Length: 143
Image (cartoon, rainbow, N blue to C red):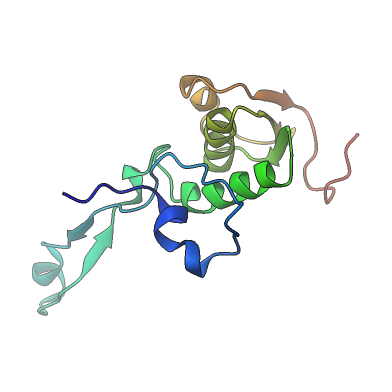
């Protein structure tokens, strides 16, 4: 039986990592391919089409695929805190991976931002903080 160990461990030779880069993983990736069964009837053509079900990732988002590398590189560089501007999946993923790495995370939400997953980082038992009211359209310039 093959046990999946996450994207970094599987694809290390293709990624910008070294032997010293920790693999901060929640076993993301390896999500199932689902055959599109009804499209033959809808299109009137024989298709051999599959959909990648990214909702099977740890935070329910494809963002986990990149976040595993981002947080791993942050930890390798000695970071103790990560920050992102997001109203949804990025904040959930960043918070979950930061918590797993035992570093802090801060999420900046734009003043006019609609929060898609406002409680999601807390449900992941993350140590992140939400800071509403920042205008993230200012190219990283904080108030």
